[in-house]
Image (cartoon, rainbow, N blue to C red; front, top):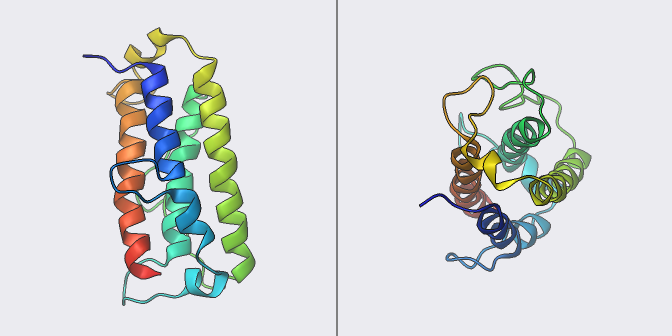
Length: 153
């Protein structure tokens, strides 16, 4: 059964609010972390919380741009966009990343609310999957990385 836009919006909202099966919401989790904690690399050769959030933002940016019809913006491994490297990261970057996540969340919901149901079956430009798959993937991707963030805080 093909998901509906309203069902996908609900999944995104539940992920953000914590009204979901893991009872953890992005908003509360991120708001409970300070900038100094977000910058720490607690495990050798692993990403900080800031880097993980910026990674989530990169994929949400990809989703939003595709929803808006942009087929040029792309992500690929090791391009510096998917996982930005910050040798001189500052705590203010954490506040910027949290704000960006919130803004992307609002913009994606807004764009989906204005989209026809037929969008979900359309192939995402420059990819082999459709929009329903991409949106579901972003939700699953965020849950996965939110688990990592929970362990690192």
